Each structure stands twice: as structure tokens, then as C-alpha cells.
Image 1 (tube, rainbow, N blue to C red):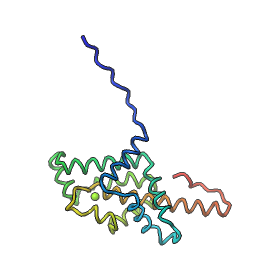
Image 2 (tube, rainbow, N blue to C red):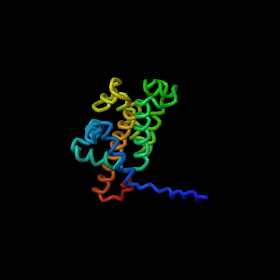
Image 3 (cartoon, rainbow, N blue to C red):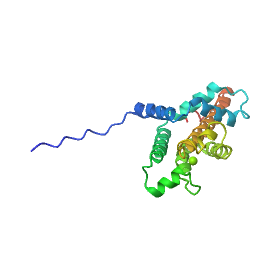
Image 4 (tube, rainbow, N blue to C red):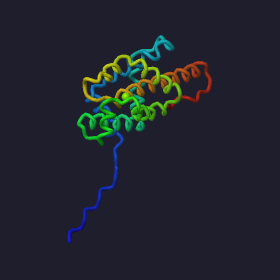
Length: 185
Ligand code: MG
């Protein structure tokens, strides 16, 4: 009798997950500089000298976290399955119509902002209401399904904003020659 093939041990390469996340954001039409523009909009009034380079850098740092990558990939996958009509019919209807009582897209986005604390949380609520820039485009219901992606993009921008706020505080403390605690978010 033929021996059953031994199952290869589970191993997932972190870089592969990170690269796939970037690849799928791009495939879904999301550019990092558009997320950075949201960050600029959120933080400019607090830090007038903030540059786009800093915003892009902070977006990249947020995207380097596995929790964030997991949320991005899960959300994009659900949007794609909804576009293909492959979900359980009732769930399919709710996701494709971005049903008002369906809030799992927001909950998934919270798994991103939760990494960055309460500033991320309030900024997320703000961009979610206002829907500026790329968020307006992602909310256009006539093209594809971005029920999850719009919240994810808002959450990445909000998290990058929170990261900037914490970093700036650390910079100020360092400038004053004080000990600082908040450098490795
Ligand atoms: Mg949504």
C-alpha cells in the first residue's frame, strides 16, 4: 500500500505576507501616497512642518506590522469573494450592499487602530465620517466592492497619524534631554 505523503510542516514567511499585502493593496487600486495624503490631512494642523515623506514613512511602518497585514488581506479577500458572488447568500447581500447594520468591516479595521491606541481610534472615526480623498473613491458603489477596504485604508491612515503623534512627543522629550518611553510603536 502506498504510504500517505507526510504533510509539509506549516511555515509562513513573514516577508511573503508583507509583500503580498503591498501587492494586493496595489491590485485593489490603493496607493501608499493616497493613504499618506489622509495622514497629512489629519496631522497637518498639529505639526505644520510635517512632510509627505514623513507621512509615507509612517504608513509604511504601520503596514510592516503583521496584525495590520492580516487585516488588510482578510478584508480584501472578503471584498473579492463578494464581487465574485461566492459568499453565503445572506452575507453576500450584506457585504455587496455595504449594509448599514453590518459592522464587521469596522471591527476588522479596529484590529489595525487597536495596535496604535486611542489617537488612532478617534482619527479613524473622523476620516470614516468625512471620507476625504481616496476614501470617497473607495465608497463609490458603482465600481467593485470595497466594503472592507475603505475601512482598512482609513484605519491605516489613522494609525499612521497616531504613530506620528507618539513619535513627535518622543522627539520633543529627546530634544529636552529627557528620558523617553514611547519610541517603538
Ligand atoms: Mg465599510
